[in-house]
Length: 216
Image (cartoon, rainbow, N blue to C red; front, side, top):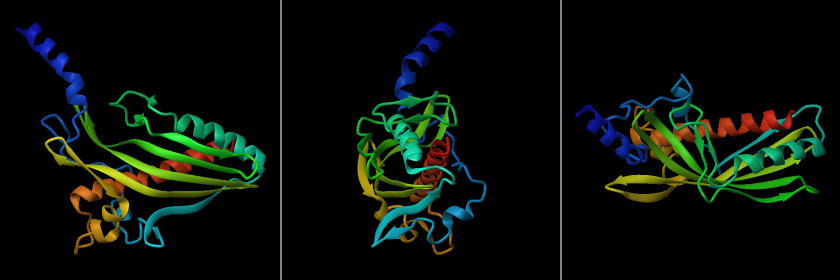
């Protein structure tokens, strides 16, 4: 009997791993990378430009020339946005998976401009037999100069699970802004709030990776 049960569990594993809503084996609580949840609920944590969600900043890379930074960041981008690439095991905290639409759209060495299309999984919670995740889509424009990388992440959207296998593509403007995410008490609403948390974490992680690559 034990052998039969083990065999059934093994055969069901691939399907359970793909579950996009929290099930029997999924964690019931949402854990963010940052300990202070107030940072995510802070008004303006999701910035906008002309009414559209956009994360715009400059990453300082002291002592590096435009040519040096471009070479290193271009190499990083080619790996980071490789279609259908996977890093690690899905149960690992640093698990990462691109989907087929991910790519480096253009790379202009002379002008120091790299344009990437992000299409990847964002994992909300994970356990041995289930993971709760969404897919995020965005554009990332990097403009490189002496000692710096101008960062512009924009045109964000998400596949939002409506239940029973139905998904709706939601623009960031309609899903993770202060208006959509923060209640009257100044707290994050449960469902859009977890998208907001993972988006902020993603932006921070991308900036960290770019700085590390550019500084080599």
